Length: 306
Image (cartoon, rainbow, N blue to C red):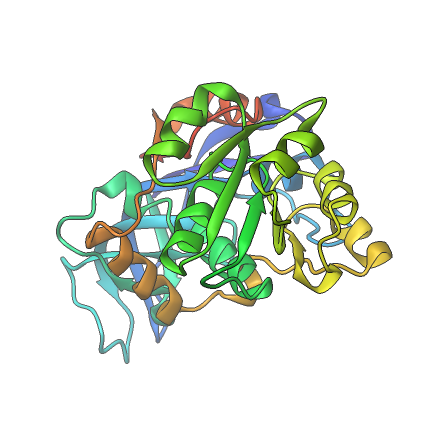
């Protein structure tokens, strides 16, 4: 048996509860992982609230979570890459990672570097692959000036660092209390709110070459107003506007692979990028964790610790 996050109908954080569930045993090609950390993401909150029902409908009772890191507890037949006791990180496609134990396909896991903290390893997949896809979508490289909205959030904080690894000049739109952190990693901070277009233009007198939106529709419109070519604008949230405006909407699904995850884990373990951890919560405080996430003012990741 395993404690796991569940919800029986769409709603706010109050619909979340902890249930005792029968995990079972892994089938061929699968592993049972004892979860040490599981990140939470805005998309999971949107699914729980029913906002993404047309794209990602829930089947009730529904679990929660994709990101995970933990220790292999049992292996199914045919598993050759891992053994019981191995430390791993990865993801679940079954909305099941926010639990004490989870069954995961072998190709959804990679070895956890020994110096990677559990809370970082357990929150890397969604933000990392989303950021990787967005950076690739806009074709950023040396000489480019790229603006990023919500630049200190879960995805944005990884986007800006990957852009710096690529050699781009980066403008990070964020609240002022995140400006010191952005400056410390070589990003030019710009405050959001009224007058943001003028502030971005002042920070990039030569113009903005590409724009990555990690927050919402207003930033897609801002990118267009700034004269950014539409094939160099990517949003990970404003899907309908992306269709209407002819901009890209590439996110995690476009880079979801164990190869990409292993590369991201190496970048973090080598110190080339960092994953800011805003807070950790025990599993039974899942409501409080999502309530904090949904304020949309955290720097980096919020993580559940089963």
